[in-house]
Length: 544
View 1 (cartoon, rainbow, N blue to C red):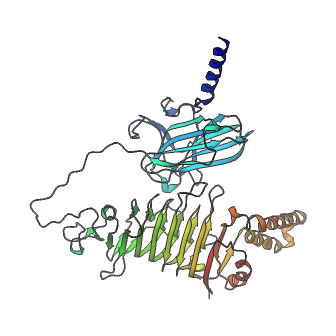
View 2: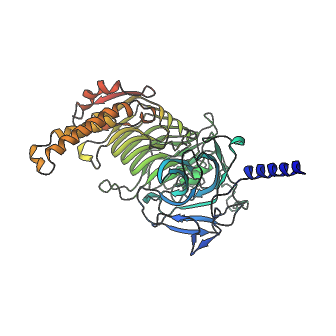
View 3: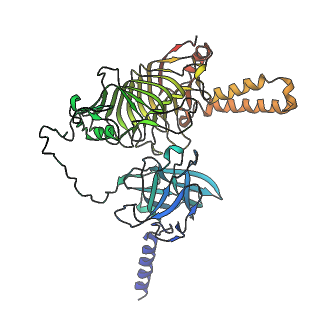
């Protein structure tokens, strides 16, 4: 009898040890109070927060947390959070479902805190237009608190977008039977509700009308022609009212959308699907049909560059093997932007002018550097008259080759922002570094400085040294000297921390200056300190 009792105690203890304990309160957002989710702290009050049971369209649950971006919330991310007291060195499994009406606008984040001080935060990936589920194991380490956050972008360009979250769960798991922190289960898309199959109408009164079959080449002009079916130039599809988007969606892997001459005013394109490999690329080819290469023009006012945001071509997340060739872009905030997960993209013979940013490549990789934008080739392009950046690469982009590309900020007559940058490679502090970037035979007009953190500090010290003694009435000389010494220490640390530390080796840019000779003077010294994983081979042209 005594032996049986001991066996019962051991079995009960084993069950209690392995049973998953749910820590999240109201993870499916079934409980609410005055339209707000119970158990969650709303830390950003600028946007509309509600519980959505009608439009969430989740296949498993009836309701979800809904965030409507109704105003410009600035560059900071909005957040709805739940803080949980945990034991140190405990393993947890996080699960969450999320989507957004506009890709790359919502994400989950987990913070580790100890005594109220943040130790680390973990970014769990960006949202897509369809429901996705992320599963991630988190070790609390030294933390005594884990904070689960539903975060979202609230800049002006994301106005009108909607973010949804549901099925949020955090459970304890047994370390002996589970893998350690850092193992990520690939985000799996949740199948949307089944939709009714579409029906097609073939008009009998026009038997010669040809309906373009999916996967065929498409032809588009600004106004269209003939029957506007897009099967050839005589029946080219009109680009307006979503015609360009419809034509691209109809082009299959290995086929081409041909864009004819003319101006495509405020016609935007989202690359939602690409090809199936390098041998079956999906292409957009500009064609001179009598009035030059096609021109995609926005409505950016160069005197008010921060008034609205307009990107002409957007490469949505997790697409790949698509190509743009022979296009012109004018008067837009950004000509082409690639979000995370774009693979095998080819951009060539592009003429970009009067923009804030020419090309932007967002890596948006996870902390381990996976799922990043990679294998990108930019060749035979030029970016003229930009106010901020010619080509921007950030947050884990890798395997990028830039060949025969010329950038020119336009000189001092076009200065609208401080420090226009020709080529920039950077990463946020919690994102993986960019790597394997090759810049070959590129032309940088106007004289440029290769800038790192150390150069910025040096420039600040030069400014202080040029400060006249009369300024001591505002800033006493002793304080000025202290500031110089402090800058000197920062410069010394930056030489090691910024130029040798692997996680910071991408924090440099190519800056444009109107004074000729600066880049030539700095070129010899700075060239030696470039990370060896980067290859830069450029031609410097004087500003004269």
